[in-house]
Length: 406
Image (cartoon, rainbow, N blue to C red; front, side, top):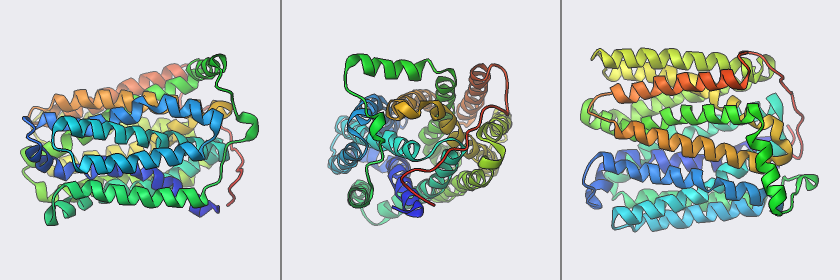
């Protein structure tokens, strides 16, 4: 597989998660009415159930991937995603929807873990950060387009067809990966399933100061993002009274995250992942604090929301792929376990924080923007601890490609 096709496939696999989340947002009122969901905040379970399924099952895939390799488990996960997309399409109650969404997320967990593991099998250091940034660019087409896709579907047919589209897209990715993707795990990294080796792998991950620190920092940053995803539909429908332009604004702010990821792919090998991501984290906190002050003083409107959100997501794009690469850099020999722990901490932790932020929605943007600011400050504190008080520098490994070529 050539480099460009490799990046495109990894990005398509990662896009499954964004599509499963963001395409739902315009349809939440329709789903709520159809399933007789009592309150608007209760509809957030349609998003949170998926995220909890996505985060909580990643330990399983990471452990199995370090024993049996990547490809078979990846295909199993994509197949689960497609099957439970169909089940969600036929849900007739909130309880059934929550079960289907959690299991859909459990299938997507394999994609989350193994996509990162596959990239780590092939690249390391700043080169890995560059590959992650390039995949992030393609991946970010999903949140840009997904709300418009969901809006278009519900304008011509019922919301259940959103899940039908997810099933069809995941089936096509399943065939593509099955035919073109090789097994990427190095034979010497294959580990037995003995309890002692499993515990040793987890011990390695959980006691590596830099790795666990950056994973926790990612959890808080994802918490702010998931709080946004949980609250944004209510903000545009109930506060700004602008449901028709919601997909447009959502796409506009997502473009800024794509642009920053593209910029990161150009500069990270020259400047280093720490230098770029630490400065971007400070920028994120600046925009989050500004956003909070605007909302707190009662001056929030669509323009201020869009400007502040675009600035934050631009910084977020520079932070996340680099934080993930820094966390994985010391864990090449246990990449499956490492990526599963990273996914569990960042996604499950982020989903929990984001749900708490979303449940605080009170008809204003104040709880959401406060969540942004607090999560950014906590992430910075954790990074300072992980780096022993030193920012903007650190050991940067260039890394060399394997199995796929430029």
